[in-house]
Length: 311
Ligand SMILES: [Zn+2]
Image (cartoon, rainbow, N blue to C red; front, side, top):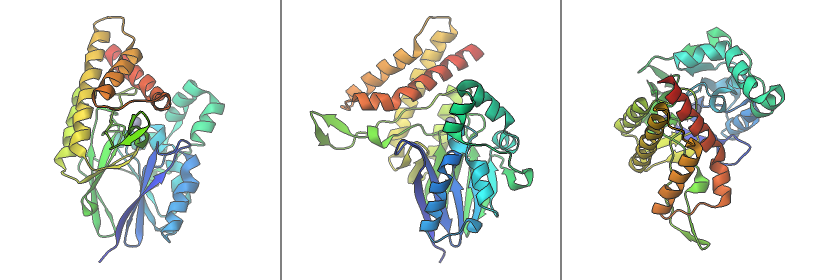
């Protein structure tokens, strides 16, 4: 019997914010997601903790080309001599030649901040990159994993179905579920966990119809666990999907208003919607919770405005 296991690697500066997954099948391993070059020591430590060597890493998989998922890919590939990078065709070409990814992020952040955030992104030799079409499979030990292209968050996104361990790796397609926000805080009492999931509509590809289809696609696989990049495994897929549909609907309504020429402060509207939604379910957000969400609210607002202008 082959030994099957999966481990969550906490990759970001902020704890429980950005995950990568180490998947082990027999004497082969794969990473799903890489975060940035700064996460490489943590990924290598996770491997070492399982008694595995970098030479045993067969695949490095990135769900899409956003930098908190794929910026570390070239560094991981450099450390794992037998690994091949697997990505969506639209993502793969930008990892072979990352000049556009680097240029666009550098134009936003400047070179110094870019290095601080993402480290170095080197080109990956084309013969170490395989682009996977919708429905394509790859083998890890005696397991067969299959990718499904899922637009809505990004046109270069796929999810990875891993039936051998009843898991689907969803990248950003199944929203954001930060562990820090999954707790009721009423007068300091620790009541049972209340779920808080929110969709990510960050620039530049947000598409409500595709996003809904992708949520349905994930549910249709019937897996017991979804592994989100932000952050970790969730098992109540129906509840998370219901909340995501609500956020996709609200985001689409805002998109329509902006597209119709209305002056809308989208970030303020999102903050109000989050306050209403959480209050209705008895989740009281603290200042620290709002701080945790601030960047996502800004990015979600920018993505909605961007999509509205495209229409
Ligand atoms: Zn993303």
